[in-house]
Each structure stands twice: as C-alpha cells, then as structure tokens.
Length: 258
Image (cartoon, helix red, strand yellow):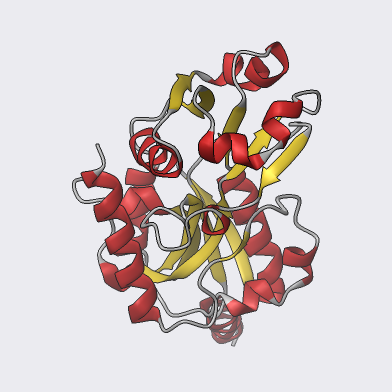
C-alpha cells in the first residue's frame, strides 16, 4: 500500500511539473539578456519551473533541441545570421521579442549639433559608433546616406562613453542612450523611413521548443515594471512567418554591408 502511495505521489508530482516552463540563462549575469530572461520567468507566474544556467549560446542551443520538458529564452537576433554557431532551426524561433532602435545623441552644450540640419547638411560632421564588426558597417552606410560628409569614428566601450562630453564628436549613435545629455533623434525611421537600416537597433527574439505567445510576456506586470524601457515590443501583431522573414532579410542586409 505504501509503495502504491509513493508511486501515486511521484506520478502526481511528475504530471504537475510537466506543465512547468524552464527558462534558459546563457549570458552574463545582470546583463541585458539575463534581465530579459528574468522578466520572462516572472511573466510565467505559476508556470515557471526553474532557471537552467549554461555558459554560452552553444550550450543553450543544445538544450533547446534536446530538452524533454518545455524551455524558452530571450535570444539576440544577430545569433541567427548565417554561419553563426548559435543559429537555431527556424522551428525554434517563436517570435520577434524586443527592439531598442538606435538613437542619435549630442552634448547639451553643443549648439551646432542641436540643429539637426547640421547632421543632415553639415560639411564636417563627426559621429561616433560602437566598434562592432557586425553593426558598425551598416551604421556607417546609414549615416553616409543621411549626409556623405559625415565622418564615422568607431570607439571601444570606455572612450565611447566619454567622446561626446570631451568634444571629440558631434553626435553618437547608440541603442541605449544611458546618461547622454540630449537625444536628438529617437529612431532611424524619422530620418530615412525607406532606408533598409532605418529600423536597425539591438533586438532580441523569443525562442523555445514549444509554442508560447510572447503576448503573455508583453501583457504581464513583469514587462510593465522592466528596467530596460528603451526596449519595446518588436513587430507586435505580425504573423510569425512575416517576422521570421523580416529577421532573415535584416540579417542578410547587415551581412552584406560588411
């Protein structure tokens, strides 16, 4: 009789956990992706199972394809570029998730930069971008289309943070404005709505081994109280097939800009 009770309890426990959803953590603790995965976990409420912590996206990719239970995670879009070791099969791409469009910022004391006509028509305009082999070529192409006289300077992280205040550059192109004093333009579509990189920005996808609507995250208290307010729902309301096609085209354009 005791054995039967034990078996029943084990069966009930297994059945109860079967509906749980685990969230994979595969990035630096406290970083943006990590914080987004915290938001996802909180949005699951009683359905949240546990965090599965791994060292990198390659290990996360293996879990997504082999896990017996349900798993989901936030996934940087650039990992889906052709040739990336972390590229997932499309069946694991549930939806686009969030996007932080690039912002053009300038220092509050720079009256010349405060006039956006200087950005568009100035003869000697200097714009700083983050030194990324993935993003910088496309950013440069976009800026040169605005004004061919723009000189683009690529910075490593630390000098990039101080370049505006030191007067080295007139503008900075950033996904997260942080403490930059003035945001001149909030997104690229304001400047060049038809440009292939106008909607460019740091973005994430929602991936996993079962279907789960990202709207469940967007509609949660956890999303409303998130710290990363520059991140907004990305292509919300569009069909999944359209979103995946959009991502593929965007990544192809980014790759071809190199």
